[in-house]
Image 1 (cartoon, rainbow, N blue to C red):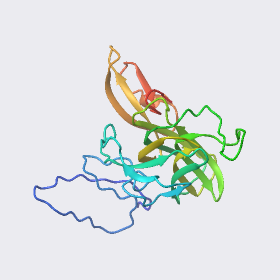
Image 2 (tube, rainbow, N blue to C red; image 1 turned 90 degrees about the horizontal axis):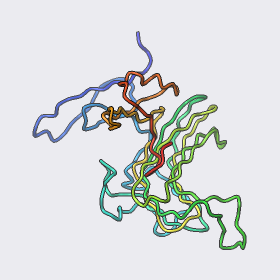
Image 3 (cartoon, rainbow, N blue to C red; image 1 turned 90 degrees about the vertical axis):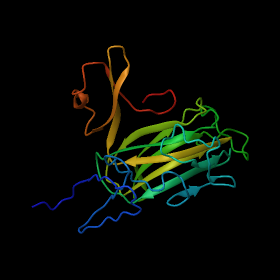
Image 4 (cartoon, rainbow, N blue to C red; image 1 turned 45 degrees about the vertical axis):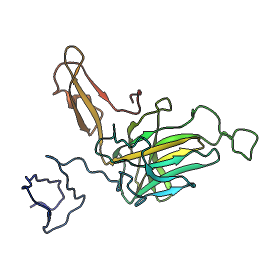
Length: 262
């Protein structure tokens, strides 16, 4: 007899002319999904990831002009399946700005989270020092940021965190992705968009947070052309997990910008 939980899915063909769909059943369930696809995607722990409104998000340091806006190019490309609603953050040299979603999720040592988001950066170079307007000298304790961050917390104590910075040389939409592993017990997970001590304006969209580690895997032909792309979930970093791919050259890549590979 099975008393645990398991992930199950079912696919159905919707008849023409159907205008409503009811899902019912009995028992306990979590992480429910309904998608227009032939298979269920991985479960995104975040809500309102398309930035259609401020629901589920908390802003810090926000000023007039910050918040939900429309993509200035009025285009979803290359953000497939996302509309043109985005988060807009305007730079402030004296201000650290963030847009955060906090989750009551607990776990322990070795838990892996993968995360990502689309960013269109207007950030100035992050290599320069930060000087507040009320000070004549740079403040070495402050750092300029444009990117996304995940923090694992135990109460108010940070257990682990990972920050991914946008490529400031790329003026187009870029996708940041990475992972963080827990080094101890935690009871809260935070996902944040960051725009600290900056200038101009940047846009954010399509937040993702998955309780698993994964990577993009590519299969190449003899000419070095990509013949297959997939996503592989890992329980370790042992690349023997993907040895079933063909003998053509293969690489594991995680996109962290227009040009950078992490």
